[in-house]
Image 1: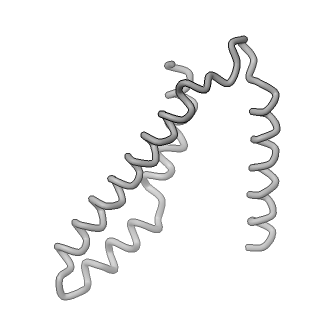
Image 2: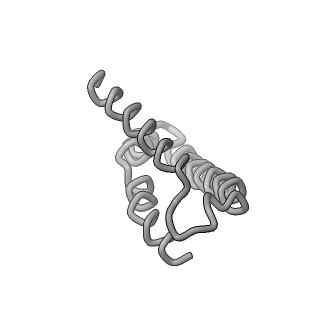
Length: 93
């Protein structure tokens, strides 16, 4: 369990401090109802991340990718496919 948390902690911090929501909140603070808009956006952002994390934990928790010490074969294929999709997105960018 500790290894799983340690493995995803860096990604979680990256999502938490990503510039997109920070920029959005700063722009919302310049609107007439900036304090309310910024606060509600931040609450919605955090609630969305919490809901997504809960769904992922509920789906991935009981799935138990494999009973061995090594990950199942489909995990490697999934990582490969996701890596290729991200590489294609980077090339398009």
